[in-house]
Length: 197
Image (tube, rainbow, N blue to C red; front, top):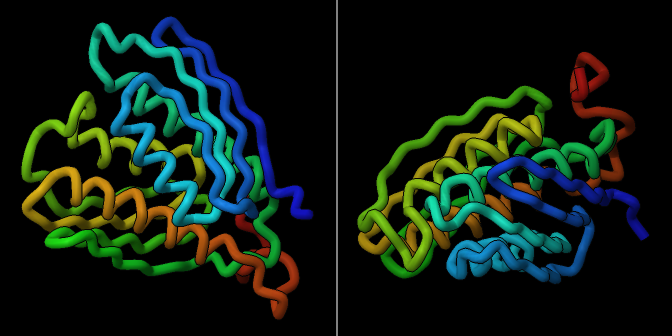
């Protein structure tokens, strides 16, 4: 059984979060953030990445969804970073495009230890349920920053629900690909000999 897992908590004046994450899971998720559509997206992320994910977030939803989505991404990124450890043997790179009806999202990722984020696209509607559409972009950026990913994300479509769901699924598939262990490799896949410094 893999030990690429982490438990991370975070408490601020805006959110209280408890999160458990396993890179090598079965796609099981137990999620409660108070934002129904965001819960659905995190469940899709776990299912399509074959990650195991438990998240409980008590956030200031009386303000809006920003702090909840951002802070869950921060904690998930930190858990991802911790679970990967020194990143020995991983494939490191991945490139995935995922369609959902008329929408398509693309993710190119380098699990490099160097956080960078680039986005190309827009959302067709400003809101999906209680979820602000642009928070999908901000989620990906916050995840990349805290997990140490170089992440290029694009999206196109006509329906924000489909656009956002395609993003979360493309993120999941690309991260699953990039973090798989390549049995031909020893150590970090870098001429530097490390991906953690």
